[in-house]
Length: 280
Image (cartoon, rainbow, N blue to C red):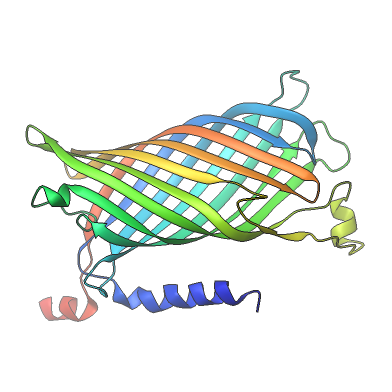
């Protein structure tokens, strides 16, 4: 029963795949550089700071049901960080990968890749559920015992998007802000003083899969973007704020990321197989 929500979401994603609309699909590729402040008391009681490199791939497309009001968004993020404490006697090397599938209901606005036709459609307002998962790790160059920490988790979040499109002369600009807040999930974590050797070799489990919620893992992700049309593509500027925190099994973690990202967006119109065959 505890895996029922995940199975239902996977079933929903599979069922929605054939329901993609013929409206343009917006695909974005972003590269970024920022800073991270991170603490993991399993590895060290000190906070480490340093640069963080990110890559974000995002796809948005409307679905055909409910009058094209439902929009599917998928995001894949890769990151790598190097950080050190104030004493400069050790370093953290971290890497991670995260994926999120989001279903937004569009209350206001136009589908992705289409420009507004009147004043009211300049505003975009969407909200919906998000299912996300992440995998990563952190390595401390100074530790002899327990030098690394693994990160594995999944959660259900609430996502809200607000945007506005306007023109400077003839050039349309789009401002957009997306806020994702995890509500309920699960994460892997060792207990305080427990080694990975005890968990995997000796099989001494100690509540290593824990439920997460806003009271023991308050987190959020906020992306503010500006889209500027250029030739056949659109340049996207993004400011990312990512806050990850948890306090479970007597271990505290946090990672505060601020990053600027730049990339491009392309709008692609999908042609159904039967129409493609007719055209040939």
